[in-house]
Image (cartoon, rainbow, N blue to C red; front, side):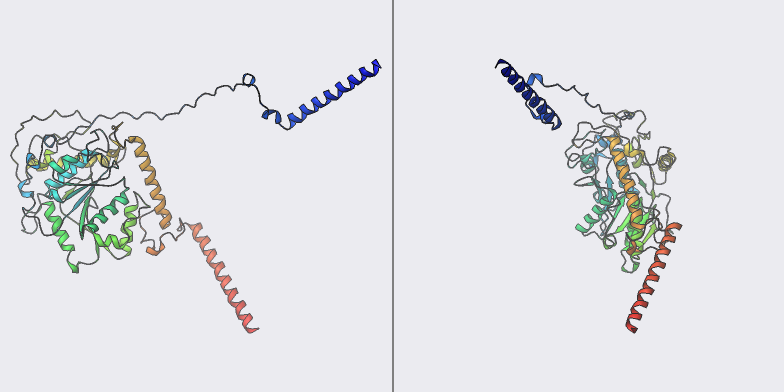
Amino acid sequence: MLLSQGRLRQAIFTVLLFFVVASGVFLYRANLYQRLPVPEGLKPQPSPLPKPTPVYKPKPELKPEITDNFPRAASAKSPSDLPEIPTWNKPPESHIEEKTPLFIGFTRNWRLLQQVVVSYMTAGWPPEDIYVVDNSGVMLSNQNGLLGLQNPFYLNYKRLTDVLGVKVLTAPTLLTFAQLQNFMTFTALERSWSHYFWAHMDSPAVSDEEYEEQGQPYKSLYMRAVTVMRETMNPGYGPLAARWFAYDRLTLVRTQAYVDVGGWDTLIPFYMGDCDMHERLWMRNFTIEDAKAGLVYDVASAMDDLEMFYRRGPRRTKREDAIPPPPPEPAAPVVKSDGRNSPEYHELLKELDRMQREKNEDQAGRNTWQARQQGGYGEPFYRDGAGFEEGISMMMNLGRDVFEAKWGRGRCDIREAGLGEDDAWRVVRDWEKEEVQRKAGEDRERELKERIKKEKDEQDKGNG
């Protein structure tokens, strides 16, 4: 009896052991053991992973801080505190009958903007007809004086409106070049301006004081531009779209012509957008003609004292990366104006020639002025200067790609290549290449054979 009980216990133990082992194997294979609750203290603790560390680009080299380049205007409270416009360039006391709005777009570099505004004022353009478009993308920050001089997008709103007497239009957000052009056209439409002018902010203008036209009285740059505009307003003039002064550094636009072709193509945000627009105008039989009104320069730097445009001392013309000029004396006397075509006038032209030549010969590129300022950290709508420049460059390259996809070629000779307005977005990219032409020829030959075969089959079917 005792033996049989021992054997029974051994048998029971063996069966239990089998079930325990079998259950363990089953749980292991089914991964069910991972779902079983484990006491907190027995859980394996994972090793802490190191936090990823961003890898930063090299810091850009700091550039010298800029200084304001119109000391007298800095202390002025109204236009009467500024030097007088040279008498021979003053606009008519009563505004001419026609409207002569001049748009100047601004995104970065206050010094260049202020320089071009002063240049047009001293060349005779009525300040109330100059419209600076604040395209800095900072909304009302400039109007409310929230940005500092070192911020690339800084614009002295009160200086422009209260002291220089020009108008400022604020774009609701940062616009590309094509969008900015359409904004100007829209504004002209909204205000019933049949014509308008626009100028680049890096292209100061000067009246040609050596100009004489067949015994006619001297005319300032402004009055010569008015004469050109009056010519184009003649109904018999023809289907004009624009007049270019020194290429398009200053442009006269007939508003309706730009509307008729659908405005600028905003899918081409910067470079090649002008090529696309002008080619489409020519395709519609509009004309773009050259004209002369004065001297218009293309520069990448600004004078340190814009009083040189008024032709009164003091005359400081150092570049903005030079040693800042000393502040003006509070009661600096106004020096009497020189005469027309004087040595001081030729000194001004010489300085502008030097600045233009310097831009054209700069190994770093023509538009280095756009990324010259680096400040503004912590101010509203702050953007990293180098990053902003890189982003704009990427959009420029995208625009080139869009233009090539739209017209099948990357060059500006669209009409010379036999393309018309209806060919946009329809031609194969690089369609002039030999292999593309050969493939197109083979496709046409195959289509011709298929059409002939189809016609023959239909004819045989009809005869049968």
